Length: 91
Image 1 (cartoon, one colour):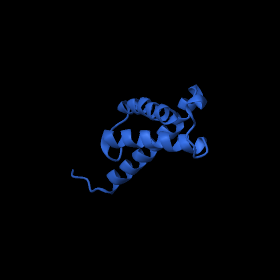
Image 2 (cartoon, helix red, strand yellow):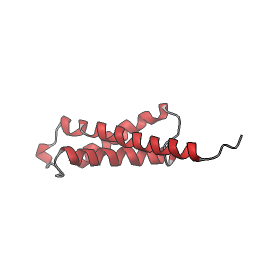
Image 3 (cartoon, helix red, strand yellow):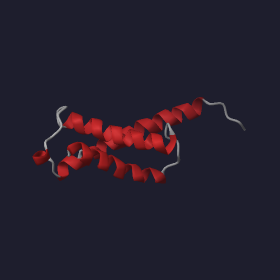
Image 4 (cartoon, one colour):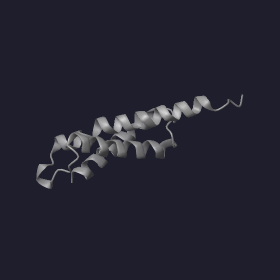
């Protein structure tokens, strides 16, 4: 259940990427994958590389996915901007 909570929180945070210019590596799909992967990885790290059982899941477990999804989307954004700056401009 904890992984489901982290994935859903990553998905929820990903929805806010529409307010940013699309400079993510892989576009909007890359931002989605980065948010979900970041939420799950961060959640696993916070829980000590152990998936909490169903009885140990609460609201705090879901909130653990927020920093990871933001970090994941930040990495995807940085990679996308770096790729964009290396490409020659067509103007």
